[in-house]
Structure formats: structure tokens, C-alpha cells
Image (tube, rainbow, N blue to C red):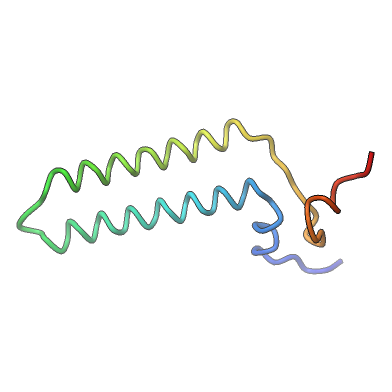
Length: 89
């Protein structure tokens, strides 16, 4: 049985790919918000913090909405495309 890499699993599963992209976006926004607070430690702009927290809440809502409404789709890691992986009718 061939070894399947984590990247192959993510790339052949549309749901996992979207979840990975949403989590990467969440980590990026969270990191940028922390950086914005740390860089200007003496001057905190409420609009930047509020906007960042709102964006984080929106990303979390998208992540939860995506996980609860999408039917899982799994393609075999060896499939070249979704068309060739689906059974013919």
C-alpha cells in the first residue's frame, strides 16, 4: 500500500482544502492583529482592534458554517481529477 502524504490528502479533498485555507487566513489575521497591538503598545487604535476582532469572528463563522453545511467529499489520492475519480453512470 503506497504512503499517502498529508498534502495529498488536503489537495484531493475539497472540504479539507477550504478548511485549511480558512484556518491559514485566521492565523494570518490573528498574527497581524497581535503585531499591530504590540508595535504600537502605547497607542491603541480601537478601530483597528475592533476591525480585527470582527474579521476574526467572521472567519470563525465561515469555518463553522462550512463544516456544518458541506457534505464530505473524498477523492482517492491517486485520482488525477474529480471527473476520473467518479464512477461512470
